[in-house]
Length: 478
Image 1 (cartoon, helix red, strand yellow):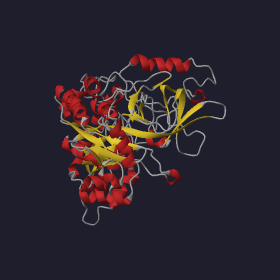
Image 2 (cartoon, one colour):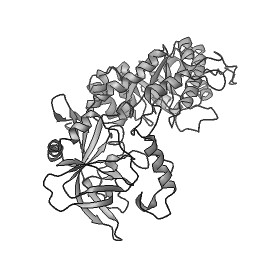
Image 3 (spheres, helix red, strand yellow):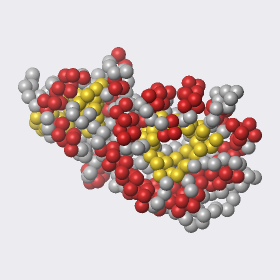
Image 4 (cartoon, helix red, strand yellow):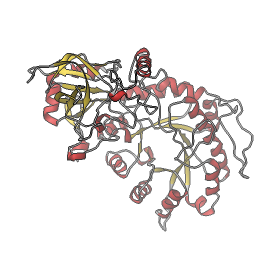
C-alpha cells in the first residue's frame, strides 16, 4: 500500500500532526491495525495535549490570573484521555455516572472533578456527594434533589451555580438560571445552611470571545451578591467552546463556501443532492484559537464599562463596580480563579479514524459511490458535516482494478442518506475495495459523541500509542 492524494472537489486540506504523517506513510502498520481491530478503528496519540494545554496556560500567565483547566471528558471516551489529562495536571469535567466512576477509578482526585451533566441521575448525584465532587447545578429542582441526598448527617454539598447569562446580545439558553433567580432560590434559609457555593459556571454556544467576557462579568456580579449571603465562591467556570482550527488555509475554507453558494440548484459537483449544509457547521478554519483567543477574552472590557454587573438584594440591577476594568483585572481584584472546560481544543492533533473500502459502485442514476466499512455516526459530531479531506492509502495488492474519478463516501446503515461525508471527493489515482481511508483529527467529539451500534454493528475499537506501540485502550477491555 501507499498513501495517495484524495481531496474534495473543492479541497479542504487537513492539518496533520507528525505522528499522523508517520502512520499514514506506513501502510503496513495501517493494515495491521485494521486486521487486529476491525474497521473502523479510532487511533489516538495524546502527545499534542500538552502543547494545547500550554497555549492556554501561557496566555493566562501573561495576564497574571489564577487559572485552571478541566478536560471535558465527554469529548472522548477513552481512558487514555483521562490519563493524559492527569499527566498535564488538568482537572476533569464529567457528564455522566460512568464518566465519574471511571475518573475516580483512574485516580483523579475528587477536588479535581466537576459534574456538569445536563440531566443528573440520582445515582450520579449520590456518588458525587459521597465522593466530595463539585456539582454544577442547573436549576432549583436539581439543587433540592441533591440536598435530599446529603442525608440526616448533611454531607457537604459543594456546588457551582450554572448561570444563564442574560445579556441582550446573547441568545436564550436552556442551561442554568438567571442571577436574580439563583439569588431568590438561595434566600431560602434551608438552602443557605445546606449548600456551599464553590463557584459560578456557565455554558455558551459559539466561540465568540466577547460573549465569554460578558459571561464572566455577570458571574462576578453574582459572586458579589453571594458573598453578602455568606457564601465564599472561589471560581468562575466559563465552560468549553475554546476555538481550534482543523485547516491551515483560510482561502480553501472561504473558497469552498463561495463555490457552494454559487452551485446551481440540483448540481452535485460539490455536495450530495446539492446540499448547502445550512448554518449548523463547525468553523473548521479559525484564525484565533486557544491562547490568542483566551488573551482576547481576558483583555476585553465589556460594553457596559465593567465586567462586573452588580445585582442589589432588592432584585434591581445596581451600578457597575470595577468600572473600566478588563476581565483579567476584574478577576484579580475579586480574587477569583477562572476555569475552562475544553474538550475539542485539548484533543486537537490527538486522533484519527481509519476505515477500509468495501466497494465501488454507482447510484441508480450513475453517480459514483465508494462504500466504507463504517457508519456515519463514527465520524460525526452535531455539526452538519465533517469538512476535512480524508487521506487515501492504496492496498499493495488490490483485488480489483481501481476506479479513478470522483465519488461520494457511503456507509453501512441501510438508509438512503447514509453519507459518511456529504462532500464529493476526487480519486485521481483511483480507489478499490481493500484500500484504506483515514479521517484526520477526529479525537475531539467526532469519534464518540453520536456513535451508534445500530444493526448490531460493533462500535469502533480505540487504540492509543503507549510510547512503544499501538495498544487497545482500557475502555474497550472493560
